[in-house]
Image 1 (cartoon, rainbow, N blue to C red):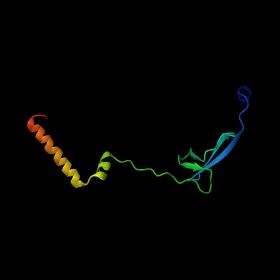
Image 2: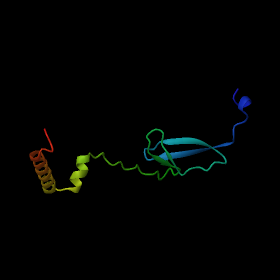
Image 3: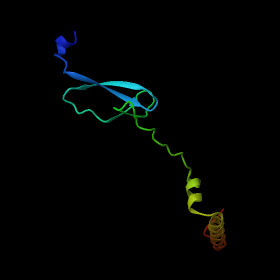
Image 4: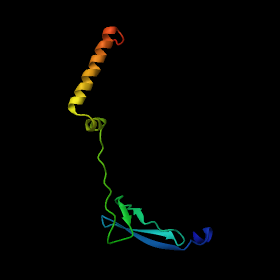
Length: 102
């Protein structure tokens, strides 16, 4: 079964990758294939390399920021208060003219 039906398997080479969590991953490549320098560790998802002595460091993950956090980076509290006062005044003026009804 297997080889008899599908033919012979291509010659393969086994390559070991190492991640910073000291996981070892053995990947089989065709002999003609170009072996990549880096591979994602299937156990932890960190990058792994061929060098067991110097595995790549874990990638830095930026924390999730809300829209408000981005706004606070760009505006000071005084600027935010000024913009809010201006928006409230504009809304009140439009209500007096009858453009906004609620």
